[in-house]
Image (cartoon, rainbow, N blue to C red; front, side, top):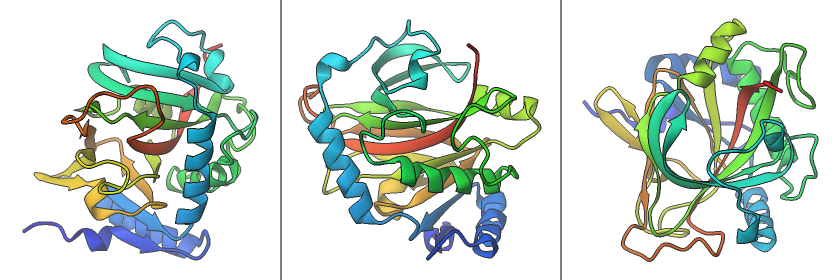
Length: 254
């Protein structure tokens, strides 16, 4: 029997630990949940406008070759082709904008990231303020960033995370991916979108969740992004397509 995705959505007025606990129990059962109400659609819209206004293609860095220290500041790169990602050989086409909490808040996302980090820390059984402002003594830090999957074929091959999961195990915590849905199919693009697989059912984020929803899934979840508007010409000159934000825990290797 197909999963009713409405039962994956939890409504919040603030970061309520009792409600988060209910969401965590559902996450343990189905591997994915969505938290609605912590971030408004208007907040997301304002940040999207700043991303569009500030975007310059000439700031793109290559897919590989940066120093690990580079991504600990505002840093933009275009990921294209097949390369190692999370310990796997994966194919993808998307752009990443790193925007750490100690860098300039050029997209007015830091307060949004802060809420997402606190959600992540709750699910991971970490202190509420863990990795909110700096690199922790154990080397973990919040890689707050934005992914843009451009119109004309932006995508990410389906996979399960391994490197981030291994880092979490080294530090005796669980791994959960916490993302923010920033765009909507039918409005920002026509086809494609992110998905996770629950048993044999494909849960398409853009069909089930709304702009501003914080989506959480765990390390056992197969996920990816289906091609964004592959029927249109690839447009790398403007900021467009599917957009999402992340607060993953990275390990400081510098």
